[in-house]
Length: 270
Image (cartoon, rainbow, N blue to C red; front, side):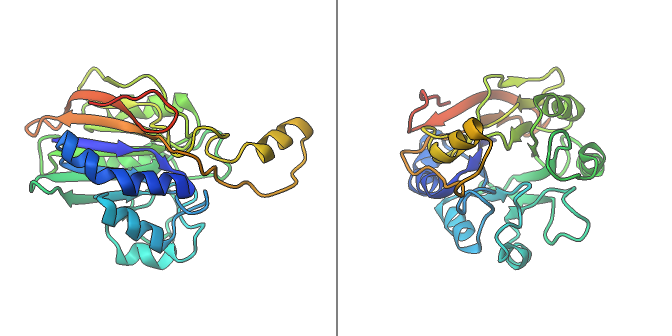
């Protein structure tokens, strides 16, 4: 299979870039399945039902969320109606929606998508992500019902993300980190065949501070005092993420490439 994962969609600039370019990328790269992390798509904080619908209509097969999963309150209801949206497995036992789901790709093959939240340096205490993922991976062994297995690990610490990659090695097709909005340069296939990238980066305006207009973050760094709310930057966005090819028989990655399309970052494509 040929799978594209795009990192955190950041505000209007990120939404516009995804909606305007996803169909083109699907055709150009002959993609079988597309996953988009959309937890910052609405004003940089959460995902509204309307914006979720727009991203799905643009061609995303699955949307993942994160620690801001329910900042937009209508997502509490919409996620129950829309199975193509995944929230973190370990968010809360009372949270609506699912943290893992088996999807049918357009070619008829099956893709399991799961998401978990890290614990290190996160503002809220979440349950152990490794324990949360274990039963999901155990119930979907490689080469079984799922032709490909993708894990979105939404996490701050690079060490925790790398540990998750090794924890899933040989049991997932791809482990990709999200949350920091800065793409890392370590796309690789681990020893047992799992594709790995510490962070996919964001789909947003990189002439910013992790997707936000620069003035207020700079003021806070310089003075230690807030004055205004953070607002998402609105310039040309870069689509940032990772492309992976998998073996249907084993479920393991055979090729992995970082993706950057448009905006300020140097272009990279399969």
